[in-house]
Length: 204
Image (cartoon, rainbow, N blue to C red; front, side, top):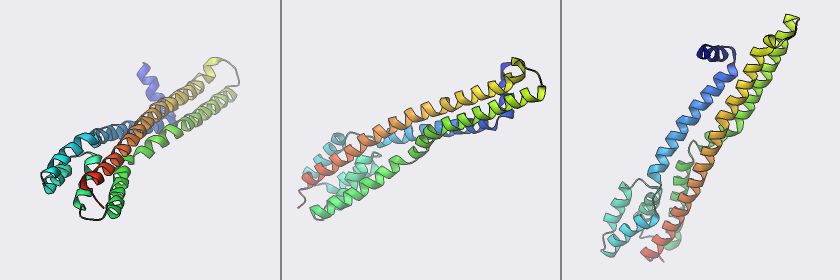
């Protein structure tokens, strides 16, 4: 019986349909970002340790090949630096900075959607609340008599819309902040790797 009432609420409230769509978006992009960050994050020491050994042996191409195959953002920045190792320090710094920005853009992909859902979902829920209360008073005016049974459906819809808005917004905000924290960590790792690679290459 409970499932029938829930389905009835979805049929009568377009707001709940929007919230369901928002929740699907939030879960989809959260999983996609989790998988991407899982492969993109790597300790710079691990990558630079392997690269350093190859450089000491004079195997620059082997070091570049290792970084190219490594999926982490740090490895991609180091790989770009190794490809242009013959350039001056200033040029190499600028080139690796541009690569760092490219990797950061990849990391930031879809995070804006999660942040937007976290900010907008409560307002959508509030809109559903207002609509539900309007329906409740309309039903009360149409019936001509008082009583909780008359306004129960509208009030229920209003409360469900509010809860749905919070249910989407709270996890989306938490997940967004979590990925932003990981983004900052990876960005710092890329900056550290870039600085250390310049020293290892002895660029002038």
